[in-house]
Image 1 (cartoon, rainbow, N blue to C red):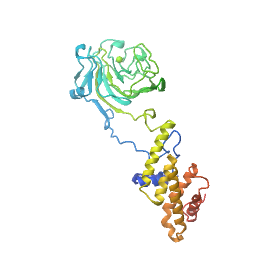
Image 2: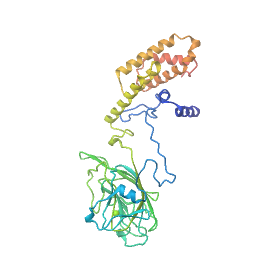
Image 3: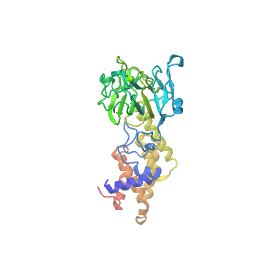
Image 4: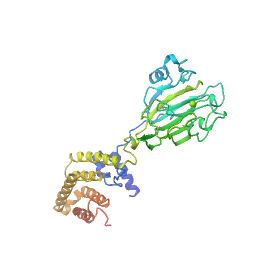
Length: 391
Ligand code: MG
């Protein structure tokens, strides 16, 4: 396809209705296979939802769920203390638009059950530097009820062990670099969390954490193995629930948090998602669903357009009735073409070319047999009419 045609196609597709889309793009990229329910460039594939980004990218985009916006209300609506009131010495507090950890308050848990997500959270160690090593500005961001911790620590010019530094997956993986700002300044985390998935003792996905500290990548798709903890390795096949509380740690230091929001991530194929490389079973199921939708749509059409829709459905799933009906409709259309006077043929150009495109495609991918009777007829007709080059 040359650049002009490509531009035209994009322009057309942008303006087209879904019916017109089917005609333009149904017979185009590599068809579905054993692991991909969609064609390459599939026009039937749902478009990603629209999200409006914030003017300042640290702020929540339109689909984010805000867990703390600086107010008492958002604190009480979104968080709870883990420890019962009679077992804690004091409570977390809201101060100067920030949520502050208090010694003896214990962990704070989100009321929302959160799974795979993008999380934004900002934190600040106390302005007045107190303590050293793990005792200075220590807190933590925990996923899924505490299964894994992204360390929060003021180790700016404060040596500690590598896998306990800010941005570490605590006990498991040090941050790639130390990108901390000086003590007492706000630090920013952007975190992409995927829980490990193990079923029946088989590890299907180690999960991952990607962490940006102040915009610098410090964890890059780090496998979580079985999660992390203090002094201990965790078993690889440890089961992570799908959802759990996000937790903030009380490590005895008055660390502050602000601007906390998250976005759930789209499901992985292992979690029933239909994007990416799927299992053969999931692919078959999804291909069947897509084919059924196309067959349903075909029922609202007639003649050549109906034939094309049915042919298209065969890309996703073989169906004897759909194939027989498509064959019949195509044979009827060919018979009609044979009766049209040469001077009247121009009116059929669009339909002939779209049928030709469909049959060439279906033949190329062996979705119709070599001796499919109408294919040569339609091709020859298009060439005779000067509508396409003789290859
Ligand atoms: Mg910690």
